[in-house]
Structure formats: C-alpha cells, structure tokens
Image (cartoon, rainbow, N blue to C red; front, side):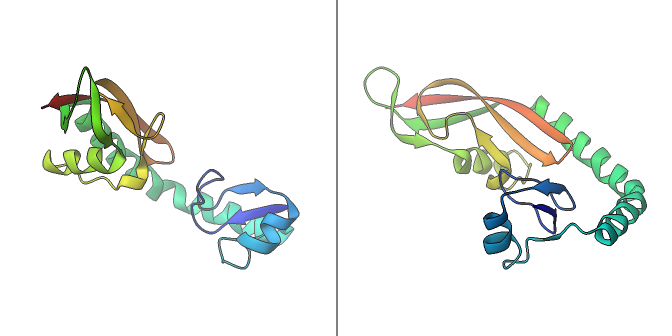
Length: 149
C-alpha cells in the first residue's frame, strides 16, 4: 500500500514522504491516526507541486541546521555520572542526559532527535551519538562519560 505521510513517523519516514507499507499497518494505524493519506494519482501531483514550492523555504532551514551542526562539532561534552568499581556506572547515561548537557552549553535539542548507539551507556569512556537536526542534516556527535565516586 502506498501512502503519503502527513507527519514524521519513527522508523518509517518524514512528512511528505511517499512510503510503501503493509496494508494492515496503513489501514489500521497510519490512516486512522491521521499520520498518512492514500497516495492516489491526484494526491501525488499535489504533493509534487507542494514540494516544488517548498524547496526554496527548505533551503533556508537546511542552512540554519548546518550552522547548528558546525556549532555542535565544536563542542566537547563530558557527562559526569556516579561510577563503581572499574568503569561501570551506577545507572546509565541516555539521550536525556546528553540533551540536558547540550542545553547547558546553549544548544537546545530535543531528546527525541538524539540517538545513542546501543541506547543506554553503562560504562565510562568516549561515545558517539547521532543528532538529527533536519531530514538532510544528521551530525555525528562525540562525547565522553566520566565517572565520579
């Protein structure tokens, strides 16, 4: 089933993407929750026209996202967490902790746009996260988790 997404859907696509999904997922979840519409011939033409008109505005947004990406690359974040024997942490460090650390540095990025490989960090050391600023701009962000006893 071909659908046009009305909103960003996690692990599926972004707003105004043309996606192919299984019939049940589209009919029972996406369409009733107003996350997508059927991709008819006329809907595809309207989508193409809207995308063409939005291309100029989109360029300004991408440029702004690239500026934020450059600012993020300049940052060095060290997240302090309680640690036990060796390099094991009490608890874990997640995207929420990284978002809070970025806010302290002046970069307000929502936690849902930050993804850490493996989810939660349970040991000290250097790590990488991906920060999605725009559908076309994804930043690989390096940070370090340091332990305090």
